[in-house]
Length: 463
Image (cartoon, rainbow, N blue to C red; front, side, top):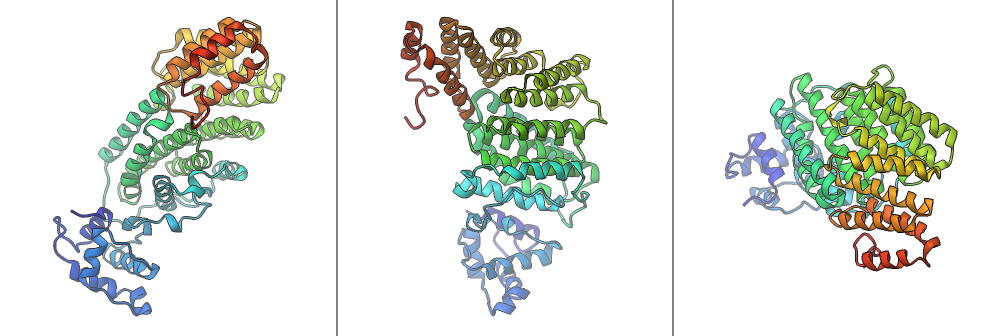
């Protein structure tokens, strides 16, 4: 059985192997030996080397890897990237990988492949990296000023069609449902594994201009989901890198609405991390970049993300302005308009967001009203979102002085939240704990804590 399937597939595409992978190893060894890199280094290779590479042996030196790239590239008529060879690249990954906005779309395949490899192999300098404060702002500015070069046809014998794009989008929808229902930590690795296997090759393939733009949009949506899941799992530096690359992919697809939605998501993460001014500015950049499009449902969401950030700063006047704008644009929209991926943003979701804002501004009565409305009209399809708004409702009841009702709502939410693998869910519980401290003498609190003490969301991490 072939171990290095990527290398074998490239050799087959280049005509060095037949479909069974059994012939042509000698001719490939000659091609590698005759490459400019091998000649300069004085290296020669036999079919035994080739068999070892296919069986999973990793060349120790960079010259050999480059010689393999050149031999394949000469036959394929294009540049072959190191990540296509199937050899582990973790040791060669820069700690800054993924932070730079791509100057041209052709960079994206190699960059996302590096990120997927680092993610799957657990490269700590990327997977556990803190977010870079400047990188998100730089990416937003690069998108706004149109810094990326246009999408060009790659030199590749492989062609893609509409079916390839539909397959990618269908898989993304499947993982999106898992994320919403069970949290980002549940199927995140499976999504990254799928994308590592499929996405770089698709991005490097040829096809009609329309198909390739659709592919880049689908790739952006999929990479954005990888970002959301990493964010939900608490891997913030990695999530930021995925968001930046998703933004570049959307730019290549010439999909301004999708790109703006990624800035919107970056705003959400920045607010979660306490970078409230950055969060507000990212939401404003999303508004600015799509002003001409006039899609009310999206504009409503961009304004409510700005409001979420401003509420955390305590700027009630500016937050009220942003909330009013969100409501105004939401009321203008017709159900079903806008891209399909914003269809989840309904009246219940808007009420949930407004509930967050009023809670953070200290308006517990309004927070209760909006959170109650959100839960009453929720579809039940988004378990994590329902958990968030339930915890907002519990917070607001505590702030209002109704400790018994706050504990009741929180207890029910935590019970439901046991199925969620989400660092964000845990953060909502931690915020509720902070509010409970002033009521620790209450019998309702003691009874509540006794009931949830063994919950995964309540217990300290690692317990």
